[in-house]
Length: 201
Image (cartoon, rainbow, N blue to C red; front, side, top):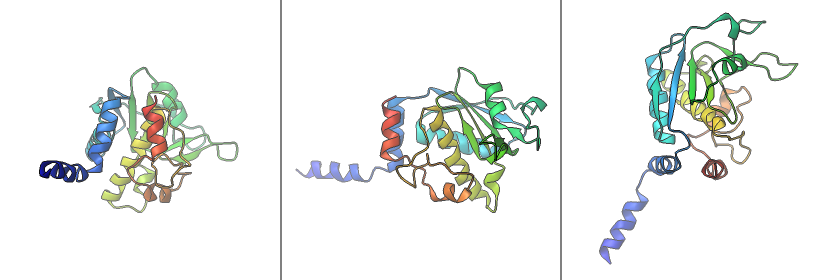
């Protein structure tokens, strides 16, 4: 009986991150994600994206050569990068995560035709874009990395078909509504409802 008790103890000390990794690795929703830098992007941000995607989804990333910003993806009013135009231009049949340090915007409604955002992902689809511009607000480098990890995993979640979560306030699939406080409140975690939706894809 003693060996069985030892096995039970070992089971309960397995880190939760490994459980999450095992779940996503088994389901394999994505084979590889191509990281596409838009303009100059800090190597620290690139490495964070690689590690986070591998740890959470069990998926490897491949870094692509950076591309420059062209006038056709800029907004008409403020000349920020228009995330909608960007996704339309670079949408493809392979999973692509565009990352930039430039500010990006999104048409939300007529009252907010250029709403500043952290990221945007096609749902469902294979392309998403993340900006570090607003993630740096009143933040240390470490805090910026923590925010970036959540936003990256959130937008990939949209690519996998997940809508914004209303089930649990700490789930990463919550709608930030443009507020960094919501991102800071979330955990690097999907609630049971969101995990089940991905599992059934």
